[in-house]
Image (cartoon, rainbow, N blue to C red; front, side, top):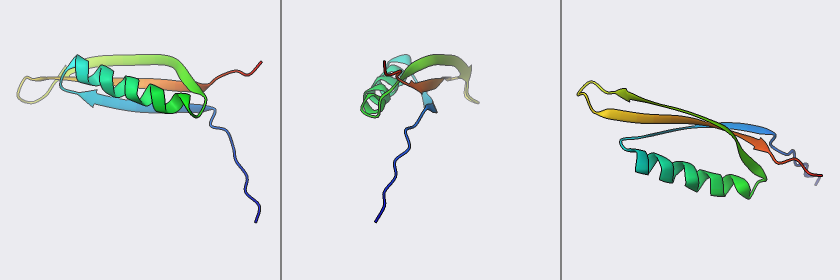
Length: 70
């Protein structure tokens, strides 16, 4: 049996929440998971929109990249 592993170089994840604290908690939790596979945050993009009832919906896209090994 031959097993091969490829390192993940880039990963983009999307998050949404009804408040900023929950959004931040979700992102920080995923940062912890991605550190274990040697990915770090490269950039974050976020915005807030209103749903049909006028309530805010916070969204974020987080781009993770492989840590450079020197």
